[in-house]
Image (cartoon, rainbow over all chains, first blue to last red):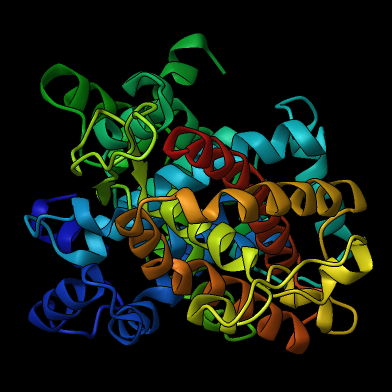
Length: 190
Length: 242
């Protein structure tokens, strides 16, 4: 993936000009709730999608709210070197990965690698052949593979970034990505 | 299938992503030229990657802004720290000049402590010197004070009975010490009152509309806990100032 494609992917869905964002960021940093609400409205779809795909539909809305409150708290650290959306997205990834750990421990229903193929395929055999829902399939991936797949193939991060986000090696990131794609390939071909 | 075949299959994603170079790239292309199975897998992986790239944003099913707005007022800004002139004990009857002494409270702490001062009064007349209102000595009465406005709204949970009792005891302690607090300290704390009060009010308003919102409920309970923490700090502050 070249740099232009990466930027294009990361900026997908961004319709608010960067300058407008920056003006609102400055206002919000001074305590302007209305300015922050405009930032929220411009970014919520992307953050919420990330939360749904990385952590799950059941907690995505709560976590989306947490991300924006965290962003409000951290606005003072935004220096404008990157676009606000990029800064917010990285903050969201870090927050979601941290919260994912908490939720995973709490729920104790982690999908281990064992038997994942059976879990992925069994319901699908009962569903219609037309039900090729990548979002659903992503939700059934093992945790590590899911996070890497979302960050790399959906969000456009590189393996170096993902390794840093998740505190794993680049090699592990690559192997998790391949694992996720292989599992999803089986799903899409049905 | 051979082990050699598997080793190429395992690297197909790297090939899809253009990460193979030199001998690895040539070896992969030679293998693909003669392996229909890997060719099929490669096509599938490319389909997955392409499908993922087409996924777009997802708007939440409901407007999350009211809950976020409620959370903003009570959130702390990491970089906002105000030096509060809190010194050690001073000689009776002597006013020390204001100076930072190494004790700092964050805006959130100040805001919470502001609630302490305001809650020491049962009405605005307290500030005007009309008279010092006293707090009824029961948890029920506490619920009706400005300290716990949320309890005036049906179905919105208030603090636990234990916490309400502690809040009440601290209020009484601080009410007795309030006159000894430095006016500038009072001013700073009072200035920040609106911050935490707004957080509570907005949480209550949001919960009135969406009473089952787990985020809001947790936010409100967290506010109660923080309030109790800062009440304790404010009591210590009053002791220092006294």
